Length: 464
Image (tube, one colour):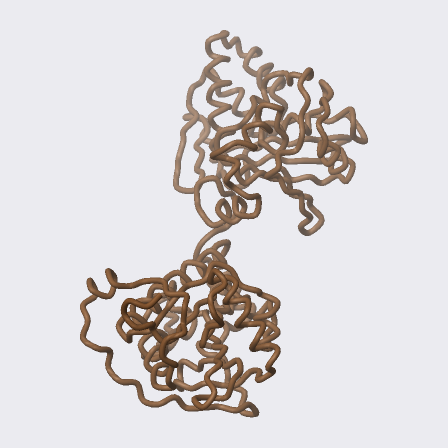
């Protein structure tokens, strides 16, 4: 690498997820996750055996030539080698002075052929989607739209890659940038232009990263129910403990929902932002929360059955029955309940006062009003937070994406119950996370604000 500390040499090796069994009579047997592949063509086996030992592409080709392989056989080997690289069976390493300085791990189609000389008359730049971060002494460069990972072990290489924040040409021997180009981490002018026009332009960087990391396909990271925290730390409780030093109010017994068909509730549901109709009663709040979010039953852990944590059942569905969402209500109902921010205890069907500061209540109302197109201050603002640890204890890579799905599920439950109770309801698209944590006296790392909703008395029919 001409720009780095020394010249690098690119070599190909089987990746850590590829298990290689040497079968001398039949060749090499590979297994990669659930896939198996037999490399038993004698005419190109020498090339694969060279890769098994870790080698440059030139060494692999020399091994084939040494066995008398024809041009056609070498072409077949290169085609298979490209397929193996794209499929993640093998990875490409850069070495300098006997040390590994970078490794490219692939997750699908490459943006450039690493086996061909790099064109040096084009200016390259970092993709606007690319990120560079440190993790346990290793620098990770990636573009979520591609899914490949470039691991960098040499700080000089980090500097070389960072220098492409502005357009510049790469040197003919710059193997690091050659890999970065193949991974889509750096792009040419044509690629940069494509990122500025729809449909790619619609995507923001952080949204592309969340989308890629929470789906399989172009994703090399661990994902799903791995229970990676099991045995390391206890799972969080089903319901967080109440604070007995705070004011608590037991909500009145809920009454059954009025008779209404699911079809009718779905078709008559509306987002109503003006809550200047009748004032909410404590019974309204009790009925709304009881039918939307109470704990119906507790489910004890069952290690034999694969449930390694205590769970519960509630009116709305939840992945793994984890129920990580917490419900807070900012209520401005003088004569009904003390004005303030309240936490809903779904096990006791009770409210616990978190803050009665007038300026906090007003800020919560104004934030919700602004999000609701500037309508009058709402009677009740619901803030949803996520005890993300309830999900992360079980799920790897998808916890935040799953909690957002749960927010949508709970929103719809709120809407249907609110419609049945003849309440005005509206889900909000944005909220003030710092304000919610301050108002609820919660730690943002323990309870991340993830959703906002308002309810009030429905306006008379025909009113605005």
